[in-house]
Length: 299
Image 1 (cartoon, rainbow, N blue to C red):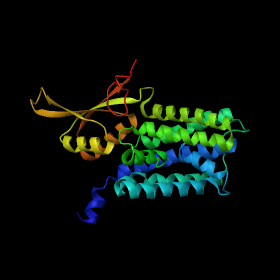
Image 2: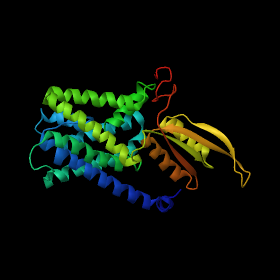
Image 3: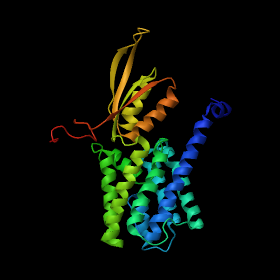
Image 4: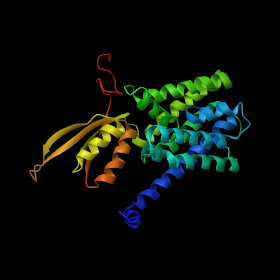
């Protein structure tokens, strides 16, 4: 395909909308860090927490350290997971540090005086909104979630990525406790919980963390392959018959997290815009599948 044809075929409307969401999300996230967290002496999990720890030993501003960290993760992702995975985080790896630099120059503060309790609450809420806006468009933050994905694929393929990410963030928060004190670590834990819940609420309201997708599409093989190998979730194919057309088709069924469902939705929209997708909210899942409650251990 010629370059001109590729440009014409490219979905510019979706891309512009993606960039708009990412910019707003980055603005919320940057303000949470620069305008709330740092002025109140707090720390966090993720790459933000790593940078906060490094700041204690380096006289370098937060945004520059974050930018270096984001670039290192991007390079590692490119080397270990390939260009395809690196392309998923490259936009956020550039945009988010840029917004951090902008907010450092603006010097905007949320609280009139130092208050670690209020700061931990609002840092989680504002940061969670920013993260939710990024995830709802199917993008990754390019932080420790990328590190967790690398560890899962290269080291622990049988452990759920969410569990690996939880361990990474827990280690970072514990380390921040040694550097900044136990109180800061406890406030960081509160902020992380609020951050996670706010992100989930923005994506799926007050609904649970697990969803079931039922997909009817003429491109079922491509979609099933994407879910199996890219999302790394199981897929069940069910033969169905349309009562009106009497046409036999396949319905794909998968259970995943809300964020993964957004990635699947994005792929389907680019693959078959006439696909029919039903989203069912699931309270819990029992089974031997990765990332779900083991039915033998449920009490």
